[in-house]
Image (cartoon, rainbow, N blue to C red; front, side):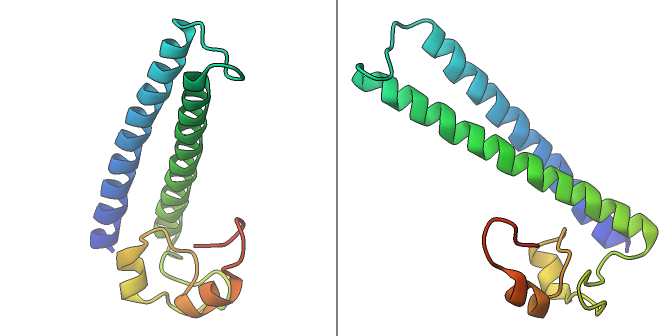
Length: 121
């Protein structure tokens, strides 16, 4: 399981670095919009700034969810349940864990439950 721990630690480090970059980008966009008289409704650039701010905000939320999933996977690793499907109790395949180290379900269960934004990885 050391290889899994190393992979989760690396994923966590990369996700936190991405989060820091996105947070900095978001702060820069907000600061830039404060320095202008942009009226989002009437200024053509205003809609671009609002869109960019919205996009970066959505990415920040996505990365935060990913960090939480990685941390949950680390807890499962510590508890000895890492790599076991939370739905059927069967092992999660090595290829799936290689592609998605924080996966909670095997590929079969993921295919059955992969609907909408509440899908389980």
